[in-house]
Amino acid sequence: MPEPSRPPGCRYTEDARLDARNTFGVAARAPLLVEIADAAALPAVLADPALRDDALLVLGGGSNLLFAGDAPGPVLALETRGMRVLADHGDFAIVRADAGASWDAFVRWTLSQGLAGLENLALIPGTVGAAPIQNIGAYGTEVRERIHVVEAFERDAGELRRMAPDRCAFAYRDSAFKREPDRYVVTAVEFALPRTPALRLDYAGIGEELAAMGVAGTPTPTQVADAVSRIRRRKLPDPAVLGNAGSFFKNPVVPAAQAEALQADDPSMPAFRGDDPATRKLSAAWLIDRCGWKGQRDGAAGVAASHALVLVNHGGATGAQLLGLARRIAASVQARFGVAIEPEPRIVGDRW
Ligand code: EPU
Image (cartoon, rainbow, N blue to C red; front, side, top):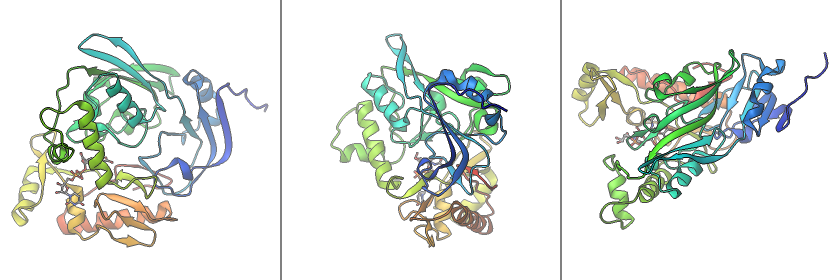
């Protein structure tokens, strides 16, 4: 069969290395890597029989996945990075960024436009396209609160969809895109951002950090982003220095009665209200810390010394070793507290 014609603006690499495309920095390969610089080429690329594969993996910044083995099928990377103001309504604006744009660069760009709302999400690794997939969140804000439209290509239908937040099934670190990873490719995200900020400074540590920065009175959104970035730099290892994927486990949600029973045993255990009032969200970091894992190592795979929720690659760890460590951590939390914890990143090449 003749090679199908390949659309312009795309680069095809066979037997590609993915080591530099995952923030854990583990070795992994893909049978085919397609890098797309123009989203308009996406329908033609996905119509290529080589990419109709069910095992197609769409890669963002590689900051929320663990290659426990090689990618089983082709890998697609969107390299589109545009950002622009679509409509300025005075007190708020609609802005749009392409899926491949760096999330933190986008947050800083919105602030430079005088727009607020994303300051608590500064310095989260990854791309704009990945943000709605796991509904990124930090310091009391989730990205779903600011999303206007997620633009996504629905693979089976071969159509571009514009999805309002109520169609995205957003929940804590979850969305329709995460639940059905083979159905959509997120191509761009639009946000509604206010010019007059309603700042959220109540999350532990932000007020103290602003004070340490010498900020008196009401801070600007940029100062809040700076404070958040300082806290993150201190608590979370920089993936460029020590391979990691941020929080490796989601905070578990349990029935309120179970949380109360655990707190009766140890009143220092943190518990927060879940989305459903009959539930409590526990701190996975605290549970793991109590099991003695913080700073532990098993060869090159380890738990960060600065935060119990972060698994790290000290250099040369394989994805399988990191997954093995994660399973042992989860088993010890289950044995000691009777609580199941689950990974936040997507596991490729194996199952949880
Ligand atoms: N804690 C410990 N030991 C530790 C770290 C934390 O016991 O080593 C306890 C403390 O009691 C602390 C509590 O855990 O008060 C919560 O810690 P933290 O404020 O760091 O928040 P987290 O629940 O561990 C979540 C997100 C982070 C986000 C922070 C800040 C998840 C899975 N993680 O972590 O997101 O940056 O809140 O808002 O929801 C990520 O998703 O990759 C991520 C880094």
